[in-house]
Amino acid sequence: MQFKELGLDNRLLKNLNHYAFSKATDIQQQAIPVAIAGKDLLASSKTGSGKTLAFVLPMLHKSLKSKAFSAKDPRGLILAPTRELAKQVYGELRTMLGGLSYDAALIVGGENFNDQVKALRRYPRFIVATPGRLADHLEHRSLYLDGLETLILDEADRMLDLGFEAELRKIHKLAHHRRRQTLMFSATLDHAEVNGIASDMLDSPKRIAIGVSNQEHKDITQKFYLCDHLDHKEALLERVLQEAEYRQVIIFTATRDDTDRLTDKLNKQGLKAVALSGNLNQGQRNTIMSQFERGVYKILVTTDVASRGLDIANVTHVINFDMPKHTEEYVHRVGRTGRAGNKGDAVSLVGPKDWASFKRVETYLQQDLSFSVFDDLKGKFKGIKPKKPHFKKKSSASQQNKKAKAPQKSRKPVKRDKSFHQNVSVGDAVFIPKKKVAPKQDDE
Ligand code: ADP
Ligand code: MG
Image (cartoon, rainbow, N blue to C red):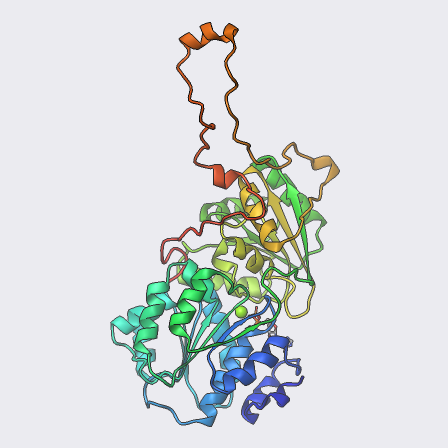
């Protein structure tokens, strides 16, 4: 189906000519008419399937076709979990605003607050923001949301994971009026936390799910390698990078410190790598992202701060140097490649510390994931078998003497150590405790 069949305003169709494509993706075909009709929406489709235009276009269409509720308040507000994603969405919004007399503002953490106050005093009609900074501006009364017509939550589940529920509820409360329309989008919207906030923030939403979040992404080839320890991981990484015919790679590590350490190592090997993590200031983060996008660096080493939404055309490979803490981040990390119909490769390195996470991903994806090997880089680690609780054998007469000296042991099953759930998969019905990350850890 062509965009022009979706009933969009001609000015938007003209701006769509900026892109090389003219056919709408499945999510665009389904979501745009429902959103234009004014319904609230809870929509999911795989990574790289064009969700941004699926919410930007109806938001703008509605504004073009109707009179604003207020002369000053923003008409549309798009929230995203990270500054980088907000910036990217803002870019796409600006493209669609070409030739229209609407102003827009990007309001994210890490940028000068007063400059943003000044930008908000110009009463932009559309705002793209991270929830923490927007909530600060609401507190400061730099803007009001009484006239807000469309509220969009991109990657809503991640905003909850990052601890932004209070900010989202505050924004919802300050923009709570009958005519507000709310749209929620993500590739992974199927966990319980989302339902809670969705039922409070959305009004009888239409649910659109193109596929399910754990469905195999046909354009992404996944490989897994077992490794023994850090040195072995690094050797495997080196080999993977040597053999891969990559244009650009994103490597995900568990912590911010690991990003720096690994980046140094890669640069010593003569590879052009750069680290992006949440502890850099925003100027540095912006510079790194724009340099990576322009191909100045071949490899971006990062944490989950870059797992969501980022759309960089040349990323042919994603490597999980460490497996992610949150299972669904696996889907988002590997989704940085294989976008808009292109092919991509995802490689994950699985050591003893990653095993529990690997098993959760396997359960989530409902696939039996197999391991690849490099014959000359084989390790000893073969995974961790679930521990069976064992009972003490009945003591025999010959053991009685020893027993008298040894402290009495209980007949109870051996106590599991505290790391049991981190180390052992307990079958298909594995329980994934959702660890709440402290708010504003990566973004604000
Ligand atoms: P998602 O949010 O679903 O991960 P994005 O909105 O970031 O996906 O879009 C991914 C890529 O697909 C972007 O480069 C975007 O320009 C491109 N894209 C968007 N709509 C279409 C379309 N109808 N046909 C082809 N490519 C598209
Ligand atoms: Mg997106």
